[in-house]
Structure formats: structure tokens, C-alpha cells
Length: 325
Image 1 (cartoon, helix red, strand yellow):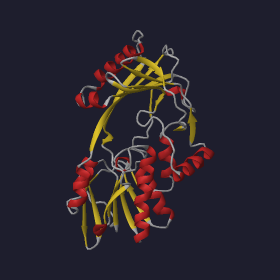
Image 2: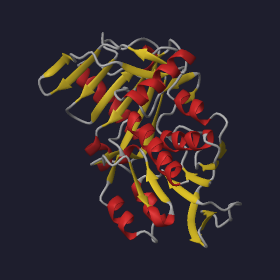
Image 3: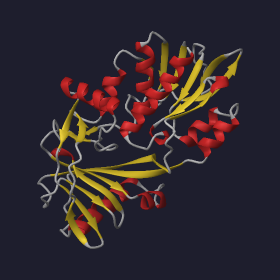
Image 4: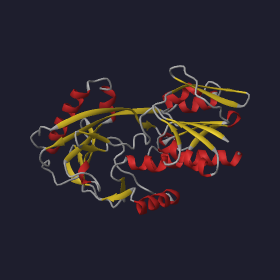
């Protein structure tokens, strides 16, 4: 089969890798500079930040097998932070033994590994797909035609973007339209000296923040004191169009407030807006399909919103195609 995949996040890459290993011709189109989606790493002024996905867990046997393979190859390593929980009552330790994994030297290692050997057209934003005579033809949003025709189309874009390709599949379009993606503002900040806390990360259940983590506590990262903050769902949505500098300053002040310390001026800070971060609610379907047109939709939002869900969603979509091919 000739398969086009829109999106080089983990679900698209897992799907592409599985199909390619079975001998099919797969082309991946990605609007960003590189693969991995929200499992990304930002490098700036000598500092490094996992500004999207912070870590992942592995619960199912298939994904555990993949993680063990990654660990043996040095792609991932366990992260054992001291995690606090902050709520209206104050700070407490999170009591759990959940194994947490991170990519090394950054979360982008996952995407790089899955992308190895694949045909990926980066910085290519697909704006239109049309099926005729049993084949798909794609166009960029500039109107330029993409060379090649395809037997199947796999869409891994967020629901709000995926529906643009589904005029031919009203039932599939209706399923996807029920899913809302919430945004998340991420702040990256570096400091001359360590922040005054014994914890490496916090789940925050009050105020403007939902998460804060000392990025340099993760294995393989530089020693410089670097923190990543995530705005809460409601706060991020309410300030979706705010200026990034204001977002960074506001959430850094909020962190000091929650830690009950004096604000510490960062040596560098920036904010990144993830417009489509987490599904509300996430589906548990694995993937969605219009069999007549060989159109599949997959992604973490189809399968529980976690990294393991993204990987499993792409794998399931690939297996559907393999079964009909």
C-alpha cells in the first residue's frame, strides 16, 4: 500500500514505522521542523527544557516491550523525582511508586528513534485531501500539490484540524467533533542558583498552575537550574491570546506564591503555547476509521491522552491497514 500520514507525532510515527517494517510505502507530512509532537525539547541560550510531555508511564505489555528496548538502547531512562502535591491545604508528598520514564537526553529522543528510516517531509502543512478513483491526492495549505497518490490516509492532527479532511465521512466527522482539546501555556525558566525546595516536581491543584518540574533533575540533562511550568487548563484557556512575556512572568510569580518563597528572577525565561494539549474528554477508541475511503484518524486524544496512548493509537491504526492490505 501507499499510505500518507499527516503528522509526525508519536502516533503518526508508530503507525509509519509499523507499516514500513511490513514493506509498505509510507510518506509522513509534518508542519513542524522535526518529529515528536508534544514530546519535544527546547534548547535556548545553552539551556534545555522538556516543554511539552514531562514523562511517561508504561502499563500495557506492548508498550512495556518498546520501553525496555528503548532503555537498552539509551533512548529512555527512569526518572525518580521527589514529587509534591500543592492544594488549598498546602504542600504534601505524593505517595506512589509509579515508574516514570523520560527520553534522554530529552523527550525528543522518542520521536527521533521512531522516525529513523522513515520518509518525512518536515515544514509541510497539508491543507487539503481529495479522494478520487480510489486514491488520495494532497495539497499543502499554500495550494501546492504534493507529489504522489495514496491508497490510504492517516490523520493524526488534533480534532479541530482533522475535521477539515472529513467532508466525505460525515459519521467520522461527527465522532471527532465531540472532542474538545484544551490548551496549555508552558513556561521555561533558568536560574543562577537552585530554587529553595527539596522537591523536583509538583502537581498543583490550585491557582494558575497545574505542574512544575526541575528539568535538570531528569537523567541526561545539563546541571543548570531549569524549570518547566504548565498553566492550568482553565487559566490557559482564559489567557490563550495573552503576550508570552506576561504569561511567563505571571506563572513564575505564581510558582513563588505556591512555594511560599520570594520570587527569584530568572536568567532567561520564555513561554510556549500548546493550543491543543489535552482532550476533554479523551476517547478510548484507539483509532477511528472510515473503511470505505480508507481514512483513519489516530492520536493520543483517541486513546486516553497519554504517551502510551499515542503510541498504541498509531499501532492500532497500522494493524487495521495491515489486516485489509
